[in-house]
Structures are given as C-alpha cells and as structure tokens.
Image (cartoon, rainbow, N blue to C red; front, side):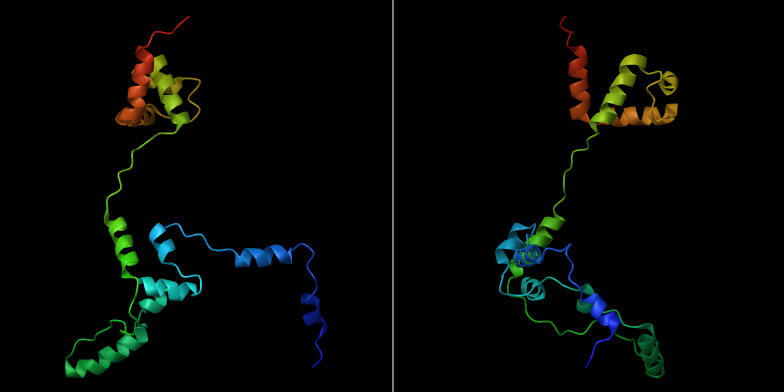
Length: 184
C-alpha cells in the first residue's frame, strides 16, 4: 500500500544522530548504585525479572493495585444487605522471590539511622566569621554592615551565627584560628 507524503516525511535520515553511538550506548551495562543488587543482577534477564527475583517491585501500580472507587462502591452496596465488610486487599498472585537476601539487606540499610554531620557552606562560614570578628555580638551593627550582602535582619544574622556555633567542627576550627597569633 502506498504511503502518503506525511508518513514519508517522518522517515528522513537525521544527520544529527550518531546511530553507532546510540547502538553502543544501548548495549552498555547499566550501572547499579547498590553492591547487593549489582551482585545479584543477571544480565540475561530483563529488569522486571531481575527485580522480581530479588523480591522488589518494578511497577508499584501493578504490585499493589488500587481498586477503583466505582468497583468498591458496587461491592459495598452488594454487601450492605448481607452486613459484611469488604476486603479490598490486592490479589495474591506473585511468584516466589529467589534472592530474598537482597531485599533483606536493603531493608536493613534503610532501617539503620544515618548520622550526618551538619555543615555550613564555606561562604556562610566566611560570612559568620567576618561578622563575629568585626562586630562581636552587635547584631544591629552586623545588619548595617556593607558586607551584609544578603540584607539580613539582626534576628536572621543572630540565627545564622547560632547555627554556626552549634556545629562543633567548624566553630572549633574558627576558635583555634582566632587564638593563634598572626605571624608578621
């Protein structure tokens, strides 16, 4: 069957695309950010098959389908006469996961509390140290300072400096530098 002009127009060669690069990119192995998942990954299987084997979900909407309201309401009205509760749990048609150790490892890592050390940016540390060196505890003076590029109010500056003081690593470093006499 003959193609019309519109269909033929779409099939023109695109000189901007490098087909060889695209093909190589499609064949490249996907990098996975987790060691446990990467070790259990099988290149011969699809993404959904790999995740199913590990006990993970590829598409949450298919794993835990939400029932439609009209279906739930129809069941409620049918069961109202009988006086029974409606069970809206998802159907239990899932294959057994073979590599459950990956899922357990991910759960364990997710449940361990992360201890992050709070840090301020170097620019904010410079700002706070400059203001403290020049004005001490005079927050109104800090607000009027020429180097108050952020146009912070005295209360905002006070909060920033208190945050700076609450981070022991950076504040202790500032105090050490302040105590050391400058060599001339």
